Length: 299
Image 1 (cartoon, rainbow, N blue to C red):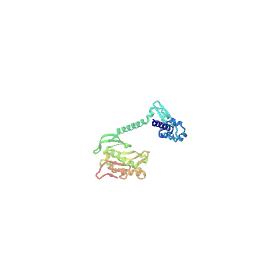
Image 2 (cartoon, helix red, strand yellow):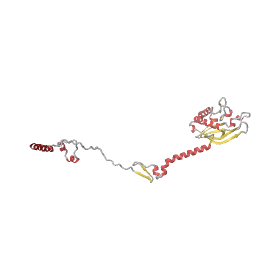
Image 3 (spheres, rainbow, N blue to C red):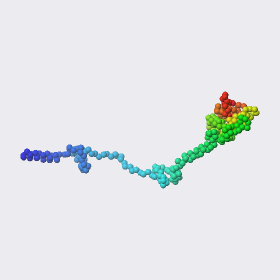
Image 4 (spheres, one colour):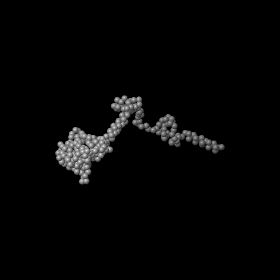
């Protein structure tokens, strides 16, 4: 009994000592927020206590910004234009009254351009001869000759080639028309360049005519009588200036252009005659599509 009484006395003393001792063994455990707020900082430091829960530092320059709604200008019941404040309305917005057509103008404009292009294409196709829209005129068909050796089996009457008009509608076959077109694009246009804005018209002196060469009795049938030839006296430029074989062959800028035209025609055409060939060609170029075994004849 005595021994049990001693043990109970020791246990009671130990419990009393533990109750009076500071609670330093529970440092990792956070105390409730209200207890931490109630205890002054000096008391926590005096008791040597630390807490693992610390307030999060707020940025010093934290500023609360409230979003401002973007201004909305109502143009029509079916359309709204959102624009930064202070930016002026465009002319379409001011004058269109919010019409739907104003919004569709950028879409409708290409349609109008395409319609014009299609109409132009249809017009060119209607006037095309020799299967080429660049050669405009009318189909004639067979042209009989009044003397043996003359005539054209499948003639066309050409009024313009590659956008350049002929001063008179010229009767010829398609081979000749295509050769003229090729020479104009490859040789004539570069020879003239931008001078006078380029060529607007060929000044045609002769085309189909059932006759002998140079109208000489007893001579062979001219290539004109077969629809293979054209005579050109000069060129009218887009600014109204003219270049003529008779007046400008001698020299200067116009003379240089004419000489280059004459030289480059030799090859595409079978016969090329100019002012230095004979007395019959002092005022024009003669081009024809005759073919010779020895090659082109150019004078």
